[in-house]
Image (cartoon, rainbow, N blue to C red; front, side, top):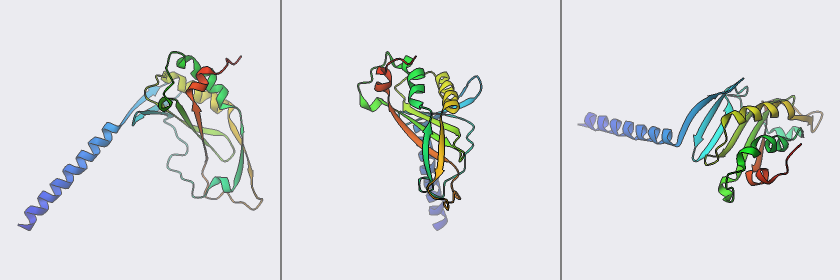
Length: 182
């Protein structure tokens, strides 16, 4: 009799696990875009879109130490100008009065020499931006954005630090209304 209940209990847990996995798949959809030079992964999660290059040099690496305790970082290059130049044309016909759909996030991952190596773009799914724009943004930002890193102390060790992540948040309404860059 006890074996019979174990079998039912196992089937019940398997059914619950299957249901959970199916629900997770509905929340996250993934597709790929082949650009001119790179392939990009596009994830749709909870009404947001995340776009990133499939090649992530920091994949599987974690920071075991807080980089801000070791380094001072000074940004070189202005990602705002790049966004204004390449995103603005796609925002002109979009109503951005709802603040819920106004935020554009960029996760910038730099190596310890200050070179921008990986970028994740995140924005509301309701905003329609052609995927080829992200290859242009990715290329321009890698060419023009970097960090100058200086150690806070000569004895500071960068042991346990794999990369530097900065997060930029931009309001699409501001980009839409920004003056044209010449």
